[in-house]
Length: 157
Image (cartoon, rainbow, N blue to C red; front, side, top):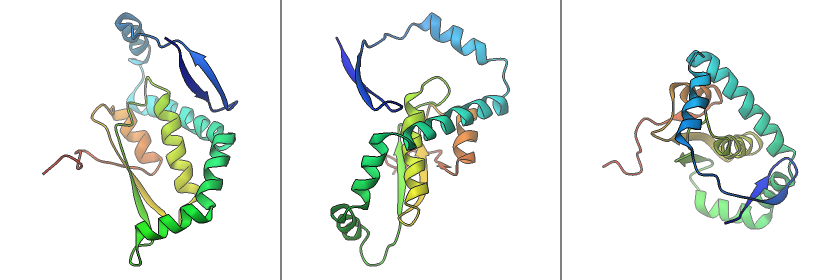
């Protein structure tokens, strides 16, 4: 079964075969990083996310997204949602996924961080929650200015 994916660097939609997760390969990959301290792993992740941010920022996808956000239709909807008493939104990301062994969250996070950077007048802060975050993930997210939620407030009573 073939699935389509987006290559942010080249903005091409390409086909790829879904890969089943092989527990032995996953364990071997994780063991490569077992010798790293949490701080070293966080530094590695930070570099990877900054690379992802550059890839996204240079993509046609992001250029098109920012053009839509700057458009009158989006701006009028934003004003309607914010109402007269609010000037900024909080972005909350649930289920981002662990950053250490998966590249998809890097690009998703990159988009959120770039939107906050480029539209700081309407995104006040970014909050993230995922029960799978590792200590290195938490360090990286905080370093990038995100607030890491320790409780899924969406489902808490």
